[in-house]
Length: 561
Ligand code: NOJ
Image (cartoon, rainbow, N blue to C red; front, side, top):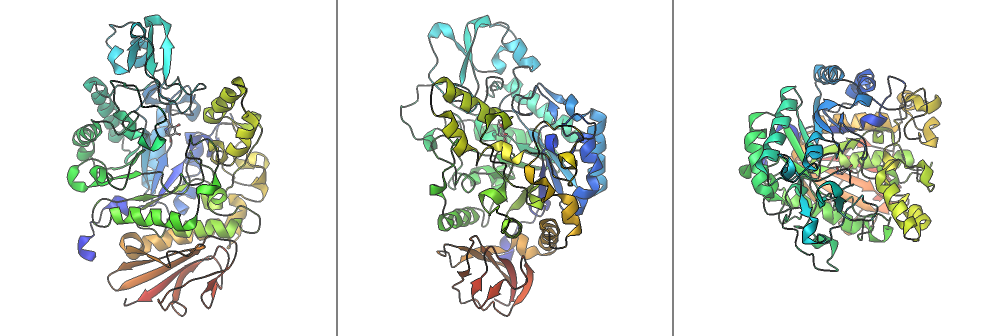
């Protein structure tokens, strides 16, 4: 095994994803900002993490909270200035922390200069920066749009009697990557930020940049899983990524992670096999999509979640990267509900222990771990069932669409509440003061009502808190190569309550046992673990004989295996 390890710094890092709008408001407008993050740099450093991924901070009308960019080279005014940004980069670097930014280049805002030009006339030099369908040819073949009220990805634009294409909202027109001018504009922009000193990019819906741009009719009733290459993973994707690598990535010692839809274990290595010079890593949705209805991703559906198949997803993906490529692991981000509500148990009794269990999991897998802000203190879902409490267009547009059609919009919201994105976008809970210490005015999105019980100040004082455990677990991962590079194998793989696995490197073997359930569970294994050294556990006596307490997490060090 040791021979096949390809060590790289970006495989060894722990990434902390920070949603700037909700982290800390320094200027008292109810919106988080860069100065707010700067105020909290010591907190970030004390987490022990190595890299911050910053969600978009570019100029944007905020139809989709910054994922609709109107100027790639300036900072959103609500967040601050370029000076603030430079100060933030320096503050992070001074503390030995790297920073990666979101690269959102499948689409721009409709308020981007390129689009404003493009829609003016058919012979405008920017016309070909986007996908247009001439209405003289009739209506374009239907395409689904994830954020559109009518779920229609084509929007009619009277100025030139044409439709433009937008997979996301109508304010997010898709860029035409077949036009080399678009591609080179993007590469230049990437270099602009890398030259400022950032350390890489998280690449938004990167698989969508290539699609079938002849826009043929899609077969009716086609299962979602077969929708590529109509929306993503199109014929030129590898060509574009290789070009980007040649033009940009190969010139910097930086890191990248692609958000990759429609990826399978079969085509995965085509993206991250080092020899192909495309990407370093990507993240897929196989394990986080569980619990969400497969039909249109809008409804919660727990019927498709069971631990045994979930474990197999991780196993299957680990196998892909056994000797080539490298994976990522995350259980929460700004597009999902809170990890402890989704995969743990957010009841008062189990919230803290199950959050610690999930951190043990993320930080002991063979992949680069991503931790979402607030998860280090076990922040939970809000589960709002009243539309007034939402800010996310994803929820609001779908709700209004159903309402317009006279369909069950309230029923939708009841189900969707559990998986809505706003669950995980609420302000960071710093202390028990009004607005959880995030701001001194009413924030853009209400703080979670439980901030008096769950907040950083309280957890700093409590040695048993999720926060202290998280720091300890990060420290353990970083000081133990087996946790980073060790071979991964499932143990007792059909156990319906326990996720148990070994990590092996050289002579060292670790056994990780995680109880994902609220009742005791027995581990069936011949590995003699009972008297082994415990490297970390979320409970003092996690196990009696082979039975593990509810939500117990424990890592044993077992030698010479
Ligand atoms: C994926 C991002 O993570 C999500 O927040 C955004 O809405 C879409 N891409 C569109 O950019």
